[in-house]
Image 1 (tube, rainbow, N blue to C red):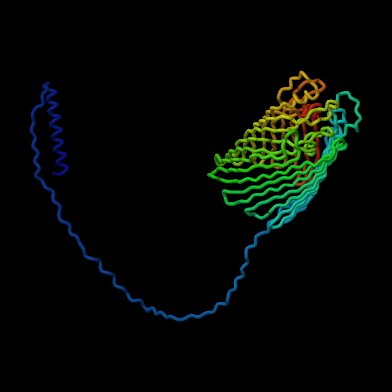
Image 2 (image 1 turned 180 degrees about the vertical axis):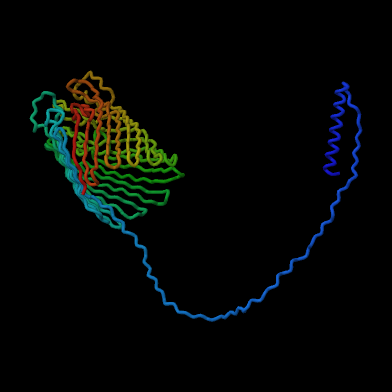
Length: 567
C-alpha cells in the first residue's frame, strides 16, 4: 500500500468518526453506533533489478619520448686546500679582589669633658701571618660628684701578631693598660685634697699561644702569659699563667680530653710582704656517645693549692660529669655536676671594683659543688634560645664592704661558712640580615651569713641583716639590639636593669637596699661612604643616678659625637 492510500484510509476513518459524533449530537443520544471497517492490503510494490558493471578501466597507452634521453656517468676529481682552524679558548675575566681596609681610626668628644680615641693598624692580606697594633683611650675629666674629684679614664695599647704553616700556628701579644679613678665616695661636704684620692692601676702583660693548624685526631692548644700590676700606692702583683688543653679522637663516638692550668701569683703591699700563691689544676675526662643523640663526659677535676683559710686542705677533687641530649634537630638539653677553685687576685678584684682598699686579703673561692641544667637551641636559623638553672655551694666567697674609717674605700671580706647560690636564667636572640637582638635575664638567690659576720666584727648589734649577699645584684636583665637601615644608618639600642643590691651602711648602722640601676644607651652610625662614617652616642638616657656600690653614684646623661675612618 502506498503512502497516498494510507492517508486516504485515515481520512475516511476520521471523517466517519466525526460524522457519527455529529449525528449523536443532533439526535441527543449518548451512545456510539457500532461500525465495522475492513482494510484489505492487496497491492505490492516491485523495483526492477539494477545492472552493475565490474569492468576495469584499461591503462592509457604510453607515447615514446622523442628524442630519447641518454645518461653519461663521469668520474669528477677536485682538490680542496687544507683548513687549519684557529681556536680561541674563552677567557673569563679575572674577578677583582675586594679591597681590605685593614686600618681604622675613630675619635669623638662628649660632655663631662670626655675625649675618645681608638685605632687599629693591621697588615693587609697575607696567607700565613697577621700583625697589628690597637690603641684605645676614653676618659672623663669630670664626674657625678664634685667635678674632677670623680673623673676616670682607661687607656690601652696592644701589639699582636700570628704566624702559621701547614702544621702549627703561633701567636703572641704585648699589652699595656692604665685605669685611672678617684675615691669619690666620701661623705658629702668633706674637704678633699684632689691628689689624695687618686688611684691608678697599670698592667703590663705579655703572652703567646701555640696550637696545631692541621686537622687531625689529636688537637692541642698551649698558652703562656705573664702580667705585672702596680697601683698608685704601694701594691704590686705579678702573675704567671700556663694553660694546656687537648683532645684525642678515638673514633666518632669516643674522645679523651685533658686540660690543665697553672697560676703563680705574688702580691706585695705596704703592710703585706710578698708571698707566692699557686694553683695547679688537672682535668681529665672521657667523652662517649653510648646511644644515639646522647653525649656523656665523665671525668674529675683535681686542684692543688697553697692558699688556705682556716682548716681547708690544699688538695681538692671534684666531679666533672656532663650529659648532652639532642631532644630534636633544634633543641638540646644538658646537665652537669662539677666543682673547681676560682682564682681571686688583685688583678681580678681591681678590674671588678677599682675602689678597693690597700692591703686587702686575697683568698681563692672553693666551689665545692655546682649543679647545672638547661635547654638551648635554634629555630629556623634565626632565633636562638636558652634557659636553665644552677645551684652552687661556695666556700670563701668574697664580698665588698665599705671601710669603717674611710667609707670611700672597700675592704674584702670572705664568708667563713658556706654561701649557697641559686641562679635562674633565660635568654633569646634573633639575627636577620638587618636586625639583631639579644635578651637575657638572670635571677640570683644567696644564702649567706656574711652581713651578720661583718656587723659582729664592727660591733653593730641590733641590726636585722638577714641571710642575703652584700654588693651583689639579685636580678639582672639586658637587651642588646641593632638595626641597619639600607646599609647607611646603623642604630644600636642597649638596656640594662639590675637591682636587689644590699649594702651595710656603717654610718647609718642599717642594712639598705640600693635603688634599681636602669641604664638605656643608644648609638647611631651614619656611613657617608664605605670608609667614612659619623656617629652619635647617648648613654644613661634615663639620667638614672643609680649606685652599683654604696656611696658611688654613676654619671647621669652622657652624649658624645665623633667620626670614624677606615683605610
